[in-house]
Image (cartoon, rainbow, N blue to C red):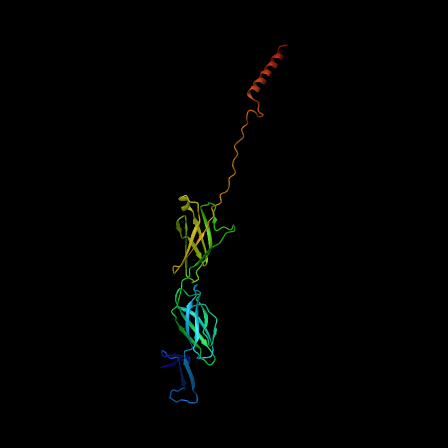
Length: 286
């Protein structure tokens, strides 16, 4: 049958037989010598306050509890939190439960993928505080991490260094289940894992040596983020080619032709002959 015990704090611990729903008991205090005061007694009603069923949202962010009252009390306030290995989930709001089934959302924030239980409480007038922990066999699914790439001041996904042989990328990464995340990328068919992750921020410097060695000029990358449970997210990122400065063409030197301002050889020869003739004419009168 039913059994009731208390601890030094006055808390009641009730054992309910399988299949039983309600019972009443009259309690009378007894002193160490066995004396009782029949005029100082209380009658308690013990019973099932509610039944509960549960589901989990597809995104894994919340569990949904449906609380069905049994009519033991007219109305009570109910609250619940998820519990996993001592880690409590996010706090929720209390809901009033009366004569109809009532659904409440239980946050699974801070709960890792896997099985968990519920810690619940209920209170009503003329009723002792009800506190319990139970399992409905629910398991939180694993959600993949989220990753994004930030753009630089030029609106580009990557910043090339002066040598034009490597570029830097940075962005954000997080996991909804608060699991650790590792990152890698693929460029020109090769894998690269040189990411630095600090909290939700990540940065990576990527060399294009493998691309140059294979004569490739497409530097687009595929980033992969993986959480501790193995869920992964991939992000394809377009990388602009390095900027090559234009070199101004050098004009060839200008070469003068025979029709230019310089006198031709025949003209020089004629002037020389005229000069000689004038010199001879001046010497004859002497």
